[in-house]
Length: 103
Length: 265
Image (spheres, rainbow over the protein chains, first blue to last red):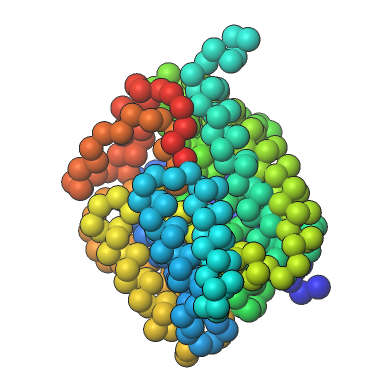
């Protein structure tokens, strides 16, 4: 139940960000520092989420089939594969590696 | 028919299909991360921002708390506020349209709109991509969520690997140049170092703080990382690593708009 509450707060705040853009004075747009923070934070968060999902297992680090998925996705992206194909290749690689016995 | 002959509408619709389709992967990953069908749908209907949605379920799936999931999703949504300012200056929506426009202000609709030079085309591109993606993204989220709940053990299908691939795919288009790559590496290292010491979900917030500090104290492009995660206009041109103004992305997008066609992502 408490997950619902945080989920709805996240939804409200996401809309608040978007709406704020339409209501703050255009002057703020001229503040390159805030734009930069928004941008660097996007990069940092996505990099962090990639790694957490690849090597974190609760509060410990693990090297398992997910690393294979990471490598497969990187190769697919390097040859400009579309998003959905990258995701499918990630899943397939992890599944195959597990079948071969690498957890 | 006249509408379909608009280049911005055509690009908007093709990007809607491409983006909408990967709603399947979000829906499937969400239910296997422990959210139920309606929680998954609530994220797509109400939160409606791919990166933030994946962040929310990524934290929950990794055992993080609801607060951590909410925080990660919210920090990732900040860029939509910047897009909103750009689009407001570009399209000047009035009345209720402002509130609808806000909800469909995401990477893809911003990129489609700012890639056009003609104000009417900018408007059409924004609405075509925004509303088109909204409808298809929700439709395919539902498909994925229903399919995902019938899969059984998600690990057997490598769905945890799918999540890793999805995040890397969201990050990848933003890594243009040395600086964004350096930021990504620093934040990745900070994450890995933090994992054993703080509760699940918190390492992501540590990385967010590190990234924000880098952005605040270093001097570089003001639109770093605000490259939308799609490239709706196929014509690529060299992006210099020069220092640019806040309007940089917009001006740049206008140049790109000359080679209108197809979808890249």
